[in-house]
Length: 432
Image 1: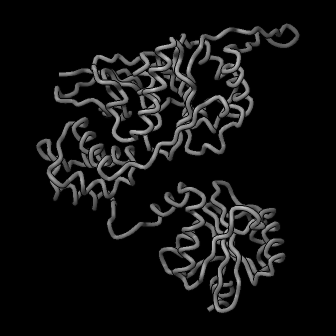
Image 2: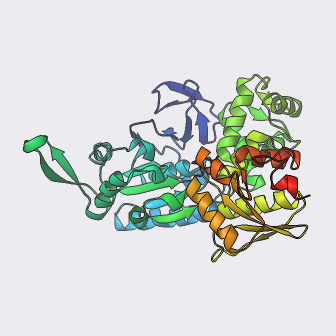
Image 3: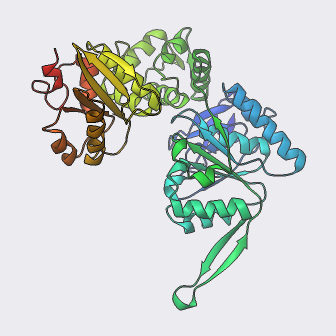
């Protein structure tokens, strides 16, 4: 029997002797952990960094325990070997990819295979320079500082971090008021690993210090292997055909697959340590996983996470299925117009806004100018968020139809019924 200690709740738990290494879940707090020899935390606690040391009691390298991403692992092995040969820290790294693709697991594996301590925190918890200073001053030579969602690090904190990378030093202010004074504290050489699902938003100066790597989509075979491994690590086995079935609902995401298995186990569908095909099918139906097509929740999540050009293609395809011919414009010189639609001799221009925040009146005012400039009959503005009341008021008496995320979903699911601000009086109602 193997026993490990969760680095989040510090409680001890047992693993079967047949545990193959890789991911497991804490039986008490649910935290995902990667276990080459002892577990390390996959996610950062809010507001603080976790100092983690990986005891590589297994002879197998931590990177070798991770499934897939062969090109990335080859590059990382080279970086680790080169650093060891020069007795230097590994180069600073930016790991890019959608949520749940395993970026933090790779950061952990880099630290494990380098034989150093990992300090794990989140960009959202580094609100002030003092938050970062408290972590930097705890680093030892060669340590890895991993910052999840590094694009969320505020500008002022990014400046502290850039100085630390440039000078291996940090400025600390002592006392306050008229007695305040600043001292420069030297730092040992260390490695920064940032993870980001929005690399374009990472501080430009900070990104210059890091080698950028993308985590590619997992193949069906890799997802099946991950599902089988996750099941063993959670203490049960899969009957023949179950991994293939579950892979269809995993969104090609290791994290989604792991969560799905945990939900299935927690709901009692694992009988005598094994998940059968019938039980797996029942569990998928019970937990809301559907084969009959995406629901609103699935579509919203997909639309908000797909690359921008894919979103534009998706919107074009939706309108084509609703009777339009669609043309995607060139990347430049498009006057803010992403798609040109044609139907019954009319020309409609479309602007796609894959935003998290609301779309305001200035965006619509600029779009209206483009619409007039190209002499289009009307325009659609499509967003993955919503519109401000000022934007809606601006569009009310103009040939502009607004599609927020809910209207877009209805257009996808209902084939154009009840879409837009007013389908009866709007452009869809007039162009038939």
